[in-house]
Amino acid sequence: MPLILPLHAFCPKCKKPIRLALIEPHPTRDDVAHHVFDCARCGPVLTIVENISEETAEVIEIDYLRTMARISRVMAAG
Figure 1 (tube, rainbow, N blue to C red):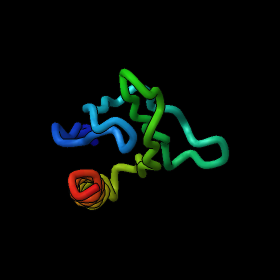
Figure 2 (cartoon, rainbow, N blue to C red):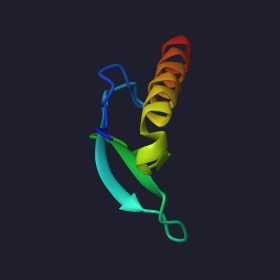
Figure 3 (cartoon, rainbow, N blue to C red):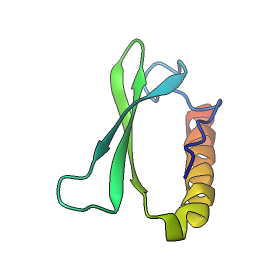
């Protein structure tokens, strides 16, 4: 599944844009991975556990976009 990076994700601390910094395997499961997002100023600020199995890639991608939209709304309101 291609990872779609949101252009509207911001650091919850300083409100600067964040970027995907690292994708690492889950320590106990083979079907998920940790996606770690960094802020240039604050360091690691967000980790999303993402399903990496092919069967659910489309559903996970939609859920990922919804999650990032929710995060963006919360940060914009705060």
